[in-house]
Length: 199
Image (cartoon, rainbow, N blue to C red; front, side, top):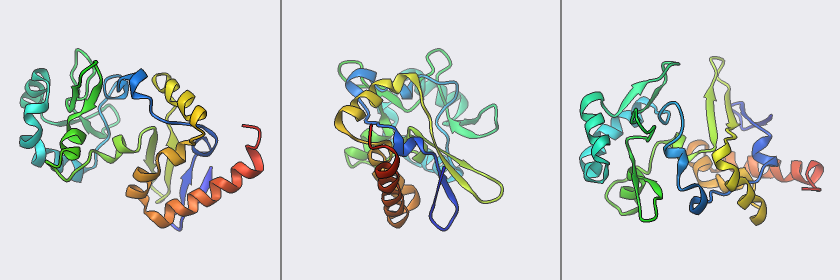
């Protein structure tokens, strides 16, 4: 682990060593479908989802609309963390929808890109494959969530020479700030120079 910033953020070496670049043409957005729980949310994000729901309602799948009407936009998972609601039969996040060719896309981000809302999507989704863990002592850990459905992203990242921390530049800045990311990038470059020259 690397310690970055004054707030004692610990970053997994996987982010520096591993290559990553989403390959949506191959995975078709499976991270919005597979899994045993929805996307982690903060209380503030949960409130935002309620606010923007009317704007994205027509983009949602009929089954997702029914689920939200019956159970709400979020729930507490087995660890009592707040997460987005999912469809019990398919595992889809209720905010997932489909584009031509079967590509699963986020209805929230679709509306954001179209200029209909100012909220891009939950930071846990924006940061993926990073997973943030907050400890009671104030330390924050940034871990790399390695998943079989993202194998094609690792292959594409290696082909393009893009490390995971580089691919996640924008969401990491959104979460931790520019100064924090600049320190991470400098530290990562030094680490790669010393330990990853044969990659």
